[in-house]
Image (cartoon, rainbow, N blue to C red; front, side, top):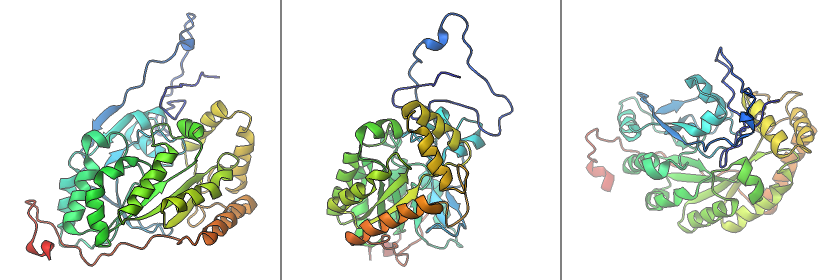
Length: 358
């Protein structure tokens, strides 16, 4: 059994190669107790992503959007449950520690967005940000890619929906408030647990739970449509907190709440089990059994319309509990869809048309 790679501020406890790699390596003790030594701090490596396009399109029947933007590939938040981890395997990196420490950034994101929005055949529809990796992860403080993207969207009056678990979104309240007045934006804060100790290992570099609730309150006070994603719900680990999270979100000013049952596609299943057995060894088997019970006997079932909520008696119970607490608090099922009729195509030279000021 290999010794877990426990780095302060990191989620994964291994860096196993991705599914496309032909070679695998294993650490071996050289007789000097080298595996007993504490690993050196794991620094974040920033890599330039030279993609020629920015908007990703999908035709998934169970998603409320058909296009999204990811200014970052990989996420420094280090959430062990992140369903986006397997995407790092396409780059030749590990979905484990590499995913949270080798981050690709798109420095030309704003320019690429402007070019794509200006195309003659572009049809306006809400853009989703934060559906794969968090656009407000720690590197955003330095690189400001999300800020630049929002400036283009605000200029063109383009609708946008944002999901994040970072308080850094407060930095952009000036842009978001103006867009909200025009009905162009909705924001969801993802809150997994109210337990600070659990959050510290589950999502080590994300904002603390109470800090996220404060962000919900600030967005609400600024007149921005804000909801909460209780995600993911992990059987026998944080499922008992569901009602308390929804109540806290309601008290903070959220207008809507949704939930997602834990998803463990591809490499995430093994990474999550490693983390679980390291941090919660006495609960591990119970948690894994309930997951399989909700996924047709497997770690994950990717079927449309049930991948978000699962199937079986446990999954049905979670759904009933969530609907009951949402009804009691008179929560909307979802936030209003941002309007699309105000969109104005940008000029490639950065200049705005006169009708922007109408």
